[in-house]
Image (cartoon, rainbow, N blue to C red):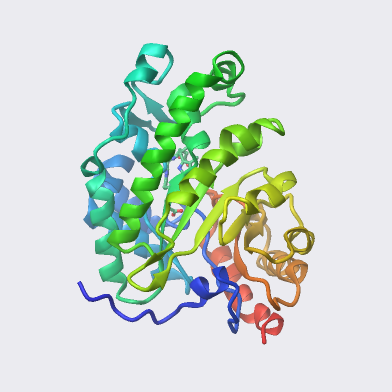
Length: 357
Ligand SMILES: Cc1c2[nH]c(c1CCC(=O)O)Cc1[nH]c(c(CCC(=O)O)c1C)Cc1[nH]c(c(CCC(=O)O)c1C)Cc1[nH]c(c(C)c1CCC(=O)O)C2
């Protein structure tokens, strides 16, 4: 396949801290239930997994938010839990209750049997990536992604979402070597998985460490950061002559920004607890920053959404040698009014121009 020329490289340039004329914007979970057209496609597909495992449907829903809003990047429609599913843990999504694994990892025996799966088990993901890339036809760059080994490990051990991470933390404090084994195999798998996404056409990749912030200082570095670094070290950083920027996002990682830079990432995601101006000073513009509007701010009025957007852009300040990609501090809520998203994107594109050049 001969790739179409990218018509909007603002996002890729900002990640690499190159000059741009406005701040690019995309939103975590931009394809999803707050869009009526997503709910429509999902009901045709029958379930979330039916949607995500079918490249035609995955392509359709990946592009839906770009048809509505002038977003500067598309993100592969998939989930961080496809890796443990391919490892044989048996993923299901129970309506209204979130993900469930039929065979969570608890015993030493189960953990000793864990292995890096054949990447063919995840072929539907790579097929979706190449189909999305050709359907986008250069309209915007495509982001590939995976969860961090720690975050994916939380679901593998807990078997579902958890409020207190009691099962995995019990393992961490009582049998750390078992947990290290899970994390190492997951990191090896994640490296291969992201590299396959890159070969299929992903133009940037993001590692979602949604639950890194649940770890104590010291343990975060050992059980989450170290494995994200292992993944980053193994990634193709250039493919077909194009740089492939890497974004690392630890939700709740505001106290560890300097540590996150040591993964060798190009950009860092930030939640809403961090001030962007202070964050850039702390990392001395060594990486680009992505974030950090509170997703709940979208429940305000149009005027307040525009005001909050300006506040985030003002916090970052004149971009200079830095790089800013506007985003939320976490995924968009399914109850969000799409009109507020339209206002957000419009305000980022217009107001940010004064910070560039
Ligand atoms: C922790 C995590 C998961 N998945 C993901 C994370 C990390 C990011 C974060 O912290 O939000 C990542 C993810 N999940 C999904 C994407 C798609 C790309 C995008 O638009 O950003 C991405 C990047 C689709 C999805 N993944 C899921 C949905 C909702 C499924 C549906 O249609 O019912 C979507 C659109 C399901 C999912 N998947 C997961 C949970 C806990 C749930 C249930 C919660 C919920 O229902 O919102 C695990």
